[in-house]
Amino acid sequence: MIASDIETDRMDLLLSFPVSRAQVVAEKLAALLLPLLVLNFVVETVTHSLAVVVGETIDPLALATAHLLSVPYFLVCGGIGLLLSVSVDRAAVAERLAAGLVFALWLIESVAGMATNFAWILFLSPTHYDNPTPILVEGTYTLLDSGILLVAFVALLGLSQLLFRRRDV
Image (tube, rainbow, N blue to C red; front, side, top):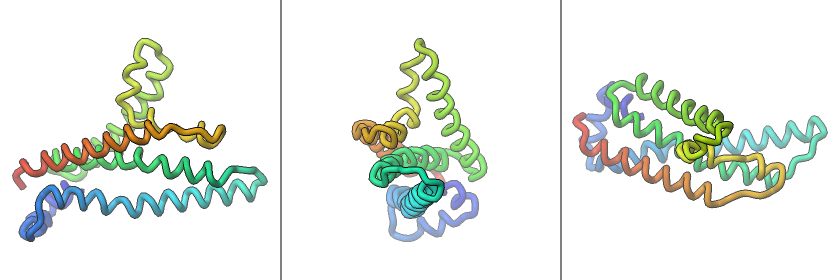
């Protein structure tokens, strides 16, 4: 998001207006919120519709809760991408690094969950805090996990803003 604008010289024009760099970073990330929510709603609706079509029952409230509580996870993924976008000069590099890091964090959660000696490493992965299975199967969820993801998102956003303020465009 940021690296692309720097690479194409749009950031020079944007920063010539009376906006702070922190505001630019926050608003770029906020622009992703609407597509994220729309996509989450569409996937939820399609999932429920397909379950009804094939004759399965699924609690619509549990499904909505699972999708709602996945938003902080996606915000953290966006925050990781944003942090990398303000850290590198080329958009393609930022995109590849972000996708690779999110995949690596998912892989860490998947692999470290099997090894008891490395259970502590699970807490580094945002995937560890987004588990829709108990919501869909048992109807139970932990708001603390979503809170941890929201704190991580705010920290990533703050760090991105700090790095972008210090960066030469």
